[in-house]
Length: 415
Image 1 (tube, rainbow, N blue to C red):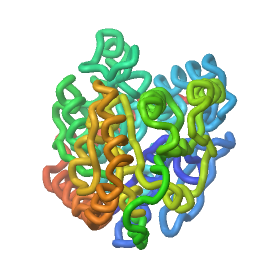
Image 2: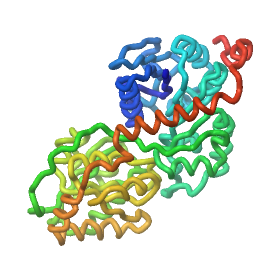
Image 3: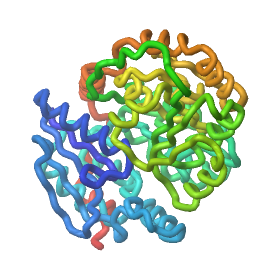
């Protein structure tokens, strides 16, 4: 089998966790005998490629602004222009078609199409290659990609987003299969009429991080060490965490908020947290971070598509308090030793933290109850599920024959 993966970025061009997950999947396919190539945008205004442990990684200069999302100094206007050009990308078609002709994949597997546009699906369709699409975020439903507005997660797609993403919804009739990394994100798209002809599946992302030896320090001695790690952004619920910490006795805990974000937002968080025992160390190595905390808090206020940080915390044997929303709530329920809270009731977070402060033995019990990685989140399950889905798509056959070359030419303007 030959698989070609499409994604906005690929290491070394890493915007977030999606790029690392695509790399994990691509490398695993190669290890198991599937010829795999990846196509993503180039950042240096040239076409280039390299061999990544057997993965043929193509970087195409198919956006006049490269990957602007990698530039932390980008302005709001630059970001808006980048998205507008990416939505109507007329540069990607010929370059992608040339790679499809060379690689001759049996399956095209797309992830984030930001900057590449859903027009990439039409290029694969023109060559008669079936498409599997994985939903890693809400970009097809919401131009902001978060479905979060005015401090609350959106219960449904609003009229403005429906209008702005109409082209994406219509193109979603092309893929042969659609995968949600949680049932929540899959159902959110199906409920809005997306992917009407696709085989639906839920395949959670996984991690190859090995389980580390759990510290055998018994009951916590001294102040409770509370941690957060990730992108510092309003949707991540950091302000909710700080407000919960304000309700706790200051001499009974210390907190570490690791990560980075917009400079103005970071400054705002530090002002809100002034006079509290909270440290903002920036990005730190994961092993170092988890060794310095007793409990992790994942207080996301939007509907996280999944929440791999839970897998990470479990691998380090650290109990976690998580927001019971979206795919995060779905995933958290799989882990013994993890405690949910309701972001709509802010006191529920401070109550959980106070319980651990007042009952040190409870923390030791939670830590001892963290078991091995649940089966759905192991790399073998990830590979097996995608392999079965690919085979199902190929057995179903391509419903429409490959388009003629003159039709392809109309889809790929000479620019």
